Image (cartoon, rainbow, N blue to C red; front, top):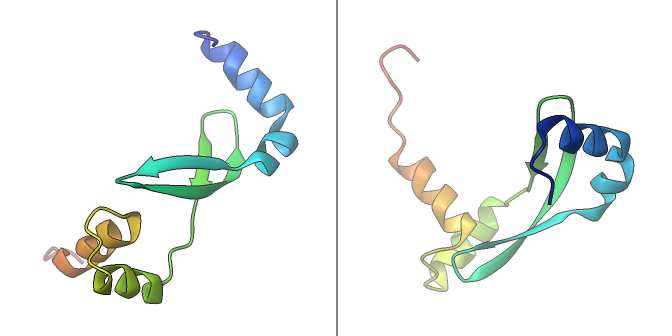
Length: 85
């Protein structure tokens, strides 16, 4: 494992096309979630995942409590716009 910022960045940028094809699996709660690496740049790596509203509701109906879909569902439901919005 590299602990050098420049070395890590250079390897990522030099190999971005191959790295983007790899994808990423992250454990969220008790589930493995698959993410796509959608961007590799000079400052950061961007990951993304599409989560359908139907999947959020289905997870809720199944009694799941700690999935990524449920976390996003709660965020949406509890969101209160500020006066500035």
